[in-house]
Amino acid sequence: MAHVLIDPQRCKGCHLCIQVCPKKILQPSAQLNERGLYPCETSDADACIGCLQCVLVCPDVAITVTDDDARATKQGTI
Amino acid sequence: MHYTRPTALQDVATHYCAGCGHGVAHRLIAEVVDELGIRERTLAVAPVGCAVLAYDYWNFDVTEAAHGRAPAVATGMRRCNPDKVVFTYQGDGDLAAIGAGEIVNAANRGELISVFFINNATYGMTGGQMAPTTMLHQRTTTSPRGRETRAEGWPMKVVEMLAQLDGTAYAVRCALDTPKNIRAARAAIKKAFEVQLAGQGLAIVELLSACPVGWGMKPVEAIKAMAGTMTAQFPLGVVKQREK
Image (tube, rainbow over all chains, first blue to last red; front, top):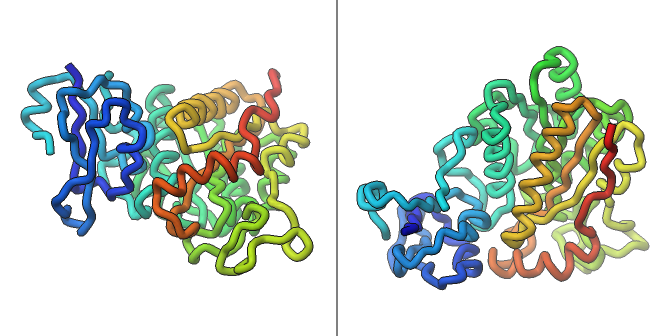
């Protein structure tokens, strides 16, 4: 099972990942990050199929895709 | 199915604006450096422009050159250190305007360096002025009615120009817009390093890149605008690939 994790402090809210996600599980967050931007978040991290399209277009390397359950739990999904 | 940050990319946030293509280009280069296992012997020369702080972002040795002089600095680094892998990372203001003479002569000498040329059709750092690569009819702060050939000439096609020189071994243009094109850009960056490692000559990879702030667009709009306008004036693909 793949998990997509977005670091809300690294994300600059360009929303390019939202455009390319085939499962449509990425969306703008309603909460501001420390930069005062609305970062992207996942609506259903477990629905990720690990295609890495979001990773390819992300200019800020804010997205990590993993299928390691332990890591996903540790970092949390937003 | 996994993706984590490449080792060759430092774990810091960049100063680039949201949606800027520099971040993608930095990441692709770092991924390829890791893949080829050359991080310990890679040297880079950063430009003057938005990427002037690239030494803070890559996890290998990076130096800064005077505006446009990165190919000359890289020439010295590569000739003095034949075992190193040397690349320059330059924008369109740096490479195509003030540094046009340096890159032409470095290519003509067939220097064993890789050149990554970020073309976003504007001067990003100084506030969106017209560059040699600004597209026809594109409005910038110094071409407020749009670029016209009568007054400002045509967009400079750097890759096609350098491909004419015998010293250039590999010349390709890619775009950092869609996942498909970004995958192609990654392959081209890898090829550019392989050309250098094989001692074939200068390799240049032009990366069409979005500058949402300079273009006055939102990031998503800027990326979508690239497919219709930018790739029409700057056709994608391999222009030259010399086998020896």
